[in-house]
Image (cartoon, rainbow, N blue to C red):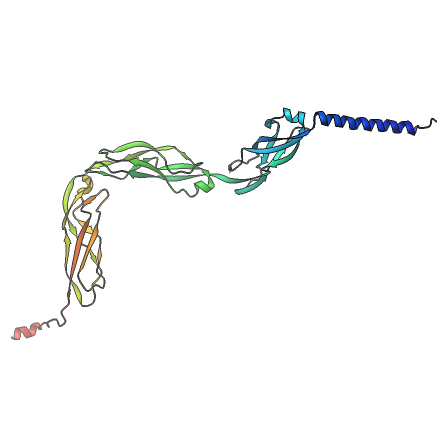
Length: 315
């Protein structure tokens, strides 16, 4: 059996190690390790149906390490930055960012490495439409109650935005108009991310001519004066005012009442300027306030005794 020549084997192993060291040295000199920063698109994956995620950044910064030759040929599209959304819950979620890099490239820094996102359920609800009137019609005209078609609309959006909404509004401008307004109108004041179906409604606002007539004012008094006093007289100035309203409304207006004047516990005359109570929708009153005077007088201390009928006949 031939004997193993350890001397020759040692020289061979040493030569191989020297060659490997020389190759690594030459390679590093010609193509050394380097670092480069990439701005990589961030994607969310696995989001369940019926949810909305906000606050997810569009990109992340990836610092990669590799040979200078490799890094020179790379682009941000060679990396994949992903956030797993499969386990999200409503509210605020803190999630890790995962990055896949090309072979031979090491990710040494990721910013941000975690993202904080807001998760909402997508909900739907039906709400009424309310018309907001802007401006004043032409002189002698009155705005009546508006009608909307359809009167209810459908909202869809994040739960935290949709739930507080109890109605939606559409503005209608009647400044200077002298005829009924009928037009499509879009909604105002809705938060971004909430959609409405249909996106617009048809609004009709009757604007009618208002005839004028004069009617008496009826003063209203409530309560009782202090003990020992009585109401002697109630006076209102002016006693007649002008009332204008659409003809069907004005026909039923025969008088106008004042806001009640409270005389509870008083012991002297009351003079007060008060408003008027509108007797119907679309009624305009001129003036809008009147002066009510309540005159008091003391009760007699010793009221005269009444003579019984029998005694009167005897005399």
